[in-house]
Image (cartoon, rainbow, N blue to C red; front, side):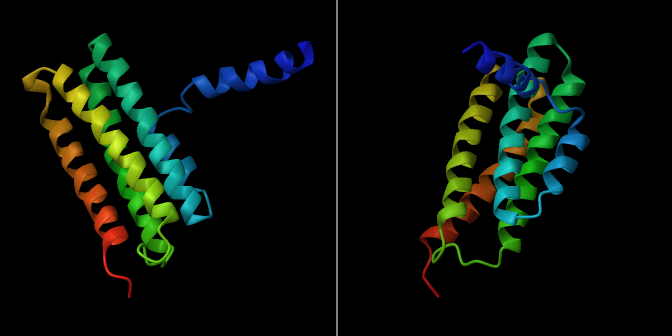
Length: 149
């Protein structure tokens, strides 16, 4: 038991820390060779960026909040492009598209809740990010529910 604690404690500590700046996080995600895994990693990165943006906003760092929200937008766009690179039809092979759609729906809920906490003056970036995530989510859902070709 002590061995397990000694082995997993550093891993858990490392997982709790951010990998670095937003550009480093996205560069790490972009290095993934498999497009399906890249899309999943990009959406995981988006979720982490939302958490980080919320923490920054609570601390009063609006510049960092804006940078992290832009990272959310870039991560969702990266996930979309990765799924398009697979060349798969979402209605015939919906697995990864559905996973992305579900994660983006959860992301939208978190962003909406975060938006309600924000001051009206600070919502400009948030509204743009929500719009991008919503359009991408709708495109994935339309692809899944569309006609099989």
